[in-house]
Length: 197
Ligand SMILES: [Zn+2]
Image (tube, rainbow, N blue to C red; front, top):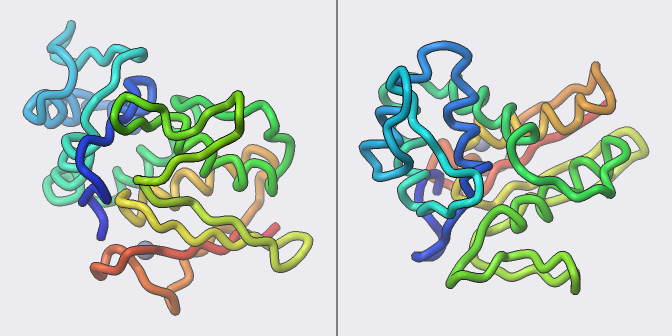
């Protein structure tokens, strides 16, 4: 279900958290107030929240901020925040085309979260640790990718991430939410997106 952590004690890095502010072109006070109310960041100049990019913040609190944005401001903003994630979060250098870009989302997702003080992807050993779900990858055709996203983030947010990652390499890529599959907006555990180009 969207907005509910899979496990307690998970943290997300500040660089990623900042996307929630960056997703608002104007009116950055709105996400700032919501993050501050959830105990994330410090009040900075012009009432915009300051996030330390190197610090770690509670995933549960960050997800509550998403839930409030969805309810109080609108789910369209969740898409815009997701679209800003690739600019804000760390991504591995292996990304060279649409396939490697979509494939890298799950690695980046784990690189930007930690649990019990341990980052959930070890770049040295290539080992991934569980606790936050996944961004799936399947390639049924040469110009067709399917990503089943089973994680606590909202449906529209993940559509934003996948759209930006795909269009970085194929400007006209079509990203569709597969309505015949489960959807987190309906209380399910996953959403499935199809990317064609
Ligand atoms: Zn969905």
